[in-house]
Length: 134
Image 1: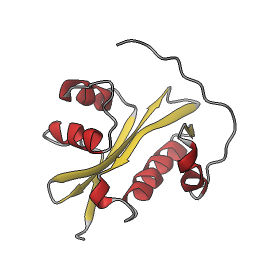
Image 2: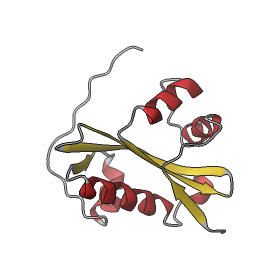
Image 3: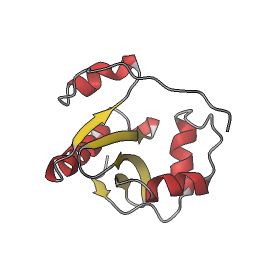
Image 4: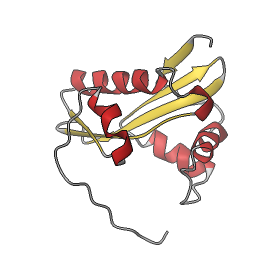
């Protein structure tokens, strides 16, 4: 694998975001390229991982910029998983939160709990969601 480049600059082609979401089965809401682009531009912070010009991973944060930061949308193309890309994205996000003195938090499925524990996260509450028709 070549060197992966990490940046806060989104991909030129937002279709690459859609490609990652669909490759992971994350697009049950039928998000469009425009929806994904808006999600990223309206996030407080985002990190993108590129192999050459190809987007291979990303993660973003929504935050009030003072107390709380919610990490969401951390994803890596399946063919690039288990190579440390997700951890590097998270480390960069955590570093940005620490520099800005906001507390990084996240919600994840139980199967990923040990992954996040390795990065210093600990379980602290019960997450809940309300299903909505979109």
